[in-house]
Image (cartoon, rainbow, N blue to C red):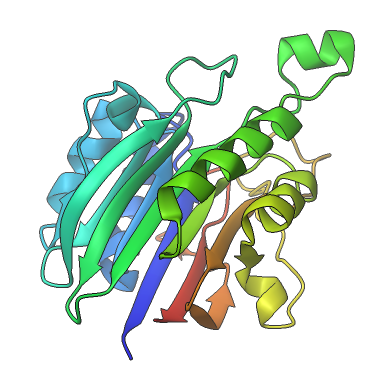
Length: 244
């Protein structure tokens, strides 16, 4: 048996970055997860993370979204990187999608890790029409992940921007299970972080970690981390410990 820790965090692009980067650096170094999945990255934030995580390798793909939307970091001494790629979700945000990497563990087991950031509820088109994007995005993600994963173990995480339907769709179509649900825990509120966000009328459990196959969640939490009076983002992170 092997144990793997994973953290997912929406980095909120470069909003208030000068005031947050010290906290982000301290957080990733303190928790030092085996795998980090980030959403809303930018080249500026990736430069800080690259320096803060010398024991990790950042997955680099050919698509521009790897440096301006989503990123995955994995510990160099725990994984061999076999492949990486992006699933197109036909979103209003052209560089988003499902960003994935296929890994081999020290014991030779294959594992697919994916991260995604679905369209926000306050997207201009959705405000005008009332028609959400996330159902179609989640359906496409679930179908395409089924083809990629086949019988292997997999983790999908990210900012789903919806506390209900993407998780439900990923479960019904692709057999993913939310780590908090598996452990009999209420999913924690991850948005907003009231210290930074003005969207305090939104109180949502929208940042998720879901697993499939022979992956057993042992622990899941949302660390409300702060450092010298600063916080990470307008989101709180989610973290899980898994046995494979």
